[in-house]
Image (cartoon, helix red, strand yellow):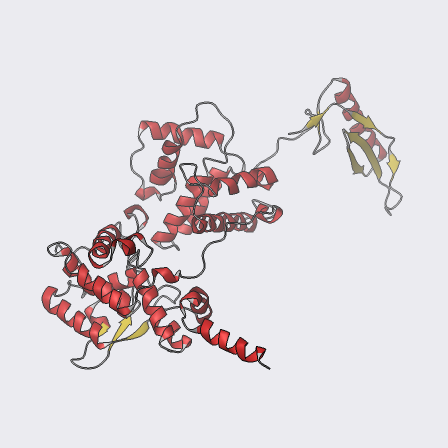
Length: 454
């Protein structure tokens, strides 16, 4: 609260613009003029008298309200940022996927410890993040016993968290933006990470406005541009068909059974452009695998991986609907003969789980992202040269999907059909894969040459 002892008073005036009699008191606190209207002159005089008495006693006057300390009503500042963050997470939990819950929490791990008062006894940042991640942002039934150090961290956060309304101050909301722009080690965060965290903060502020906890979204009052994220696929990551076949063959050589059990899953990512979580949820009943000709995959579910604390089942994989589609919507993907043969052989060799799932460990568990990433990196070392291994070429399993979509576009498949098979919107498809469509530069150069000859 900003205060001043520089107070001046003016005479009470009758309000000439009012049809009914009223009286205006005017005074000045520091550089700010204040006024208040009363229905009778006596009320106005009593008010000014109280102000003058406070000034004589040497009380400080608040620059915002113009009132002395003795007349200022304790302001109801509303919830703290920490309190609001907890209620926000509780409200969003039921309607959010596990990965979304994880993303929201990750953003709040940056924001909550940054939006605090400078109180003594601040715990280590890792302890603050741990109590948020393992206790504060979980539903009651998911919470375990608080360790002593976490109890102290939680108590400190509850006492130190800034009022939510303080975010209306530009300096405070900027400190929030500065916090999401850094990793936990203090280094600049990746552009996509910053944008995801800012999206969480923006949605929180919009919710606060909707719930009348804030008068407006404070992010709209500051000029701040998030770092630019790469919106298009890097062509250097895209393998050609020969390289893709070499990688799939190399996968079968990794480990005694792990690589061979995964090969068909990677093949689905390349030949059908499945997302890894879609391949993880693929069941035999989703596959039409004729003895000859093209087959068909009808996708119904995906099984994205997340930390157990964020999933509904308490397992690492939850069943979800397809990305960007209604809950029970499906997606049909014609698959070439080579993938039909791979899937038929996989089913013959390894069978299926009780629910029909094709891809799982020898113990029936879903493959973890760390497991198939490790197999993938070993396959790259077997299939590629040293220079290629050091390059971005197929650096992640997901790059097989990029290679598939790029291949379809360059083969002349209409973008509408490619978008349908890949589960994209056409506008997103063309924007994301713009750099991977070959031959356009040569055609454009030819057109310009013809134009210059006129």
